[in-house]
Image 1 (tube, rainbow, N blue to C red):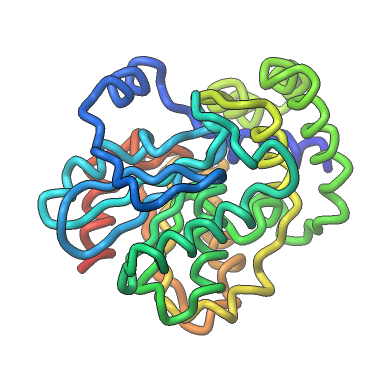
Image 2 (image 1 turned 45 degrees about the horizontal axis):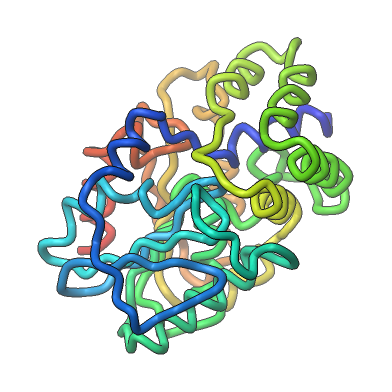
Length: 303
């Protein structure tokens, strides 16, 4: 059971940015960076004017994952595209050692304070969704609203509601070591070996496991934390309203059709009931796979 849990979680956590799309995003127009903020943990690109929206990408992805959404919003909002150092081709900085999501959240909080950003909307995908929850729990009323996209306060609960950090930790450690020593290709090989007899779940792994790129030390630490950190005890500290967006299918035989109840269970510790929006036809990379439907969900969220 634990091997299947690990395979399913790896498929969920890693972000796929199709090569052509990633190239287009990187080569597109880049916002001018304000020199006022400097961090050894994160990079922030800012453009537009108006109410503030912070976008936090997932494991193995950079701020370019949000660029198509930001392009439709920066005429009336000020958008801040966050990249965790070490993802993509960015310099690793101080993410060379120690924790990843916690320090990244602390730096985002410092950015909000130093830039005097008033009650921003914070949108995070996958691991970035967990970082968004950390920021909201830490900053209380200083955060206006939060959207988490295909994310959970405890990822293993999306596969088995009874799973615990202690159960997952040995497999998370194996994944960490495989990434650290041999890179993401080694982890993919291990997952392929585990998933031979898994049917559709195995197909999801083979079709969905991929990386935009990054330093293997940061990828390994991010994978380990996403699999083992349980943020459910911190949900009660979040004052901002939370919207949960996730990919969904009408196919009753598909695993994603059965995720809705698990998402609701995972967020039940919030002081106010979260708002849930499913995006039909999307898998994990919701904003790229269904950009128009996702944009409509973001616009409802912001209104």
